[in-house]
Structures are given as C-alpha cells and as structure tokens.
Image (cartoon, rainbow, N blue to C red):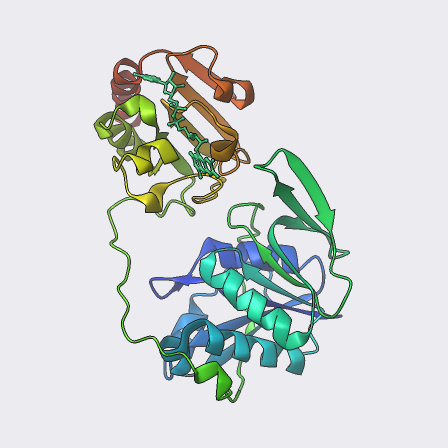
Length: 317
Ligand SMILES: Cc1cc2nc3c(=O)[nH]c(=O)nc-3n(C[C@H](O)[C@H](O)[C@H](O)COP(=O)(O)OP(=O)(O)OC[C@H]3O[C@@H](n4cnc5c(N)ncnc54)[C@H](O)[C@@H]3O)c2cc1C
C-alpha cells in the first residue's frame, strides 16, 4: 500500500485535532506516516501526543533549524522524508505556516499543489470552496506527488487511539534553507477560551454589538465556546483581528456557530458556512444569514443573549 505523508500539526507542544483530520483524509489514499518536526531532544515527547487518528507510522525529524530557520527548514525536511518514503501524497494543515511549507515542498518535489481543500477523495481529488464559498471546485494534481493543504475543521476526524510505530529519520538541512534566520518571535497571547479554529462551539459578534462584546463573551463562556467576530467588528477595533471569521480571517467549522448581530456578507459566510448547526440572532428579519441558518432568533442581541445565557446556565446546573 502506498504511503501518504502528513505533517503533524502542533499547538502548545501537543498535536492538534487537525493532525487527526489530516490522518483521516490521508488514510483514504494509503498508509499514513505522520512527520513530526521537532527541536533536538523533543521529538519523542511531541510524537507521544500524536495519539489519535488512523496513523500507521510516525517519522520524527529532530533539528534546531526548525526554530531558527522556520518554514524553509521545515519544508526542506518534509520534502526529504516524502522522497525517502516514496510518498503518494503530502497533506499539510491549511494555515499560514502550513501553506508556506506546502508551497516550498511542492517546489522541491517539482509537484503540483492544491491549497485550502475542504476534502480529498481516495482518488486524490480535492474539493475547494471558492468565490467566498459560493462555488465548489474539484481538482487534482497532474504532475508529481500531490501536495495538498487541508482546511482545519473541514472533515470529521477519526479520533480512535493510534498506536503507530515511531522511527527517527535523519535529514540534512540544506544551506539554502538556512539563509533566513528567525531573530525573535512572540507566542500568541492565550486567553481562557478554546482556540477559535479548534473549538466545537463558536459564538461570534458583529457590528450589531456596537462594540460591546460582553453579552457575546458571557454566552460563549456558558457554552465553553470560542469567541469570533466579523470584519466590521475587528476593523472597528472592537475585537482582535486574530478572532476574525471569514474570507480574510479564520475558517471555522464547529458543531455550533452562533452569529450575533452579523448580517451574513458572503465574505463572512466563507469562513463559517460549513458549521454543522448555525444559529443567528439578528434584529433584522431580512438579514442574509437567516437564509443559511438552522435556527434563527429575530431580536435584539442585548435582550436575547442574557436570557440564553441564563437558560444555558440553568440547564447545566
Ligand atoms: C475583500 C473582502 C474581504 C472581507 N473579509 C471578511 C471576513 O473575513 N470576515 C467578515 O466578517 N467580513 C469580511 N468582509 C466584510 C464583509 O463584506 C462585511 O462588510 C462584514 O462581514 C459585515 O460585518 P457585520 O455583519 O458585522 O456588519 P453589518 O453588515 O453592518 O451587519 C450588522 C448586523 O447587525 C444587526 N444588528 C444591529 N444591531 C443589532 C442588535 N442590537 N441585535 C441584533 N442584531 C443587530 C443588523 O441588523 C445587521 O444585520 C470582507 C470584505 C471584503 C471586500
């Protein structure tokens, strides 16, 4: 059976759900080998967190160049592992880092690349949503080893426990991959709420909040949800840009998405329309987001959300 390489995705030194999603899609095409790129001495600990999903083997590559030289070193190593394993495909998470790594890997392998796939079939045909999600495209790489980036939260991951065999793979990071050096970096500020793209519930606020996210945050906290925002809200400086959902923000696909005071512009829908259940709270019954919601509440969010918060808290008690 052919080998499909996935680049294991980590946050705070632990494999993310995205890793299991990549493995789930990869397993349709072959035996999944998860590549763990780690600082020297940390590979085994990181690999131990790659514990869910249909993963057949884990290849640990240790190098301090990953921290010092960033994407270039990561791509160099991943391309070398893909070549050594005779990979049938390479799957990487579709975030900023993953897409840059994937592009460099595609160049190194002289292969075609598909970015922002929301699904990939056993025949390596990728599905993408384009033009703000209004059009579905099916495409495949016709030259070389397909390199595909998969949007987090797009597929239901197989979260069964994995007991993959682990091996350490030696690579030599090329001089050209060491030409740029990361001189300083700052980890993102972490709040107490779940990470937006990982959360199973997201409560978002838009211009309708008029800059007051207190009701949105309270409701989110009762549900254990992440907080998102429309671009109108982030551009106004009401909420950090890192929480923006949409075409130029983050793509989320939670079990439940609650949009509060958001009209539903196509650019916002592009980032949330694959959510499993969509609830809209808007005082305008003609708001476009009502067209794609599962449940809608026509009302003032400052009246609706406190009541909903109290009801959820009472139901949990
Ligand atoms: C290239 C490009 C990229 C873009 N990328 C993004 C993106 O990534 N994400 C994104 O979100 N947008 C994006 N936009 C902007 C997008 O087009 C919209 O302008 C934006 O989504 C509107 O945000 P909003 O729904 O919060 O505001 P509005 O469209 O102004 O809607 C506010 C809504 O709140 C309702 N409301 C008002 N008061 C209340 C209340 N008290 N209670 C309940 N409801 C109330 C109103 O009825 C209205 O429906 C992009 C635009 C462009 C051109």
